[in-house]
Picture 1 (cartoon, each protein chain N blue to C red):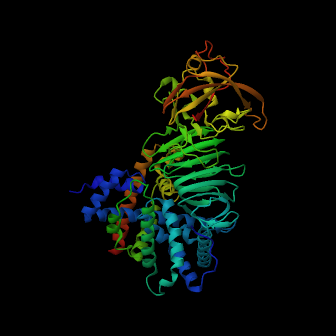
Picture 2: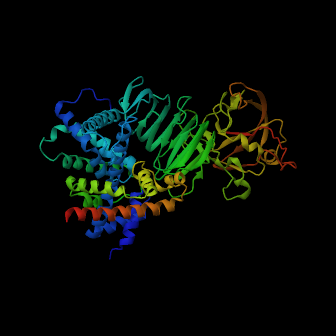
Picture 3: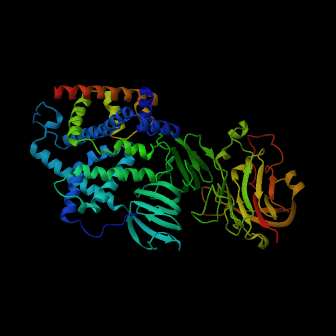
Length: 180
Length: 448
């Protein structure tokens, strides 16, 4: 339960909050790699913001902010998933730990991949771009996209899988071209 | 050896939120055993996060470009859209985004405004009646609370409950029971559970997500739309007196019984009746597998069992606003079953009343009706009467007519089931113009 905060944040906390907002898409991306549901991931990011605000004093300026926030985010996500014991279809805790114990990938690497991915998205056919937009911006599932585009859910699923395959290949080409 | 194709299928299902328990166990085992599998999964999960980031970033650029569209007569330089902005306006936009981001997150962090209307004495929350607070989550381990949102929606929350308050028109019940009275301003109010989304169309309705993987939705007044989680097409449009159990990976099913004292929020479609109750359950022959029954509207109706609920003003039917009045003093405080008024048309229905102690079972029959044989053979006419205050749906605040009902009685000396038949003795010859009188009522009182 969260009551209205009674005191305004101090300068350090405000700085931490500003850094958080600057990195919030990176945090969301990291949370989505553990909790794939967009609405739940957004809720978790809000929780992370509150936790980070409360624990702002434990972060030292000059150290890796994103790594610190992602550690908080990982624990918040695991707590969220544990609290949702009624949910079926989630990975075992030890497996989530195995997958993510190393923390987030280097943000500089992720930024390169992100820039390359944005270029690749520009090469998608308009219909495929629309589907990807609905799935990843609107958080819609194939069953929700299908009536909007006049396709069957399975056709949407296949088209999304193709779009993701195209983006993955394009991304690898872009990155290898940059590195060579 | 790892099956890559199968791993991709499971990863897709994980990403799309449709991983079954068996799939999750299989995927966990595969990932636990193989570092290669973990690499593939990690890449897929990272791609999922990156795609969200890329699409969101594109949307921000798109929005920025709309904000700074060139004035008429000024030629835009043909270069990528995200470079059309000047560095100054990009910096301003970035600052605005940061500012709005902070404001939005702080605003969301403050939660939703709530007025505490009432709390039970044992409630595990420190708020007291009259408090105005903000919360984005609510966990109550014991007690009950009545809360009013800024939309005017009043929620009766019964512990144990865990819920998130997304805004004044939208809550997510992760677990527990919530009854909402939405009023006029709250039309469109949404309650989400792990299995269902319920959209109010002006009503009083309840949602119970206490049991694993299933959600019960019952409508006490008005109308709601029920959707399965994530589905666009609704499963059902429920009216007053109707209920539906939505279960994961199973077809939605009828709720037959709702029990509980006659107070908002004090209901359950899953708990057994209290020890002191006489009637524990009511069932009928209206099976979803029966071809004739399939055509019948009451396949979604529930019987409302109200322990000690018979008194003047008690609602007579689960699906109407008719009330009992002039209740004989000997019957006041009897357990009451609200039947469905729509069953007045039903001449093939058989009802079963389960009782857990010796008692007298009463059936109230519209005095205009021919008495069916099952009643005259098994029950005795007490000579007493009870009145049904019939109210038209078009004018529910006025009693349109007072109808006299005869009180029939049967003494039952041990726990068991009592069988009741249809309100009419035989199928009418002319079914199209069949215009029956009102449905019967049922009550029971323990033997002293």
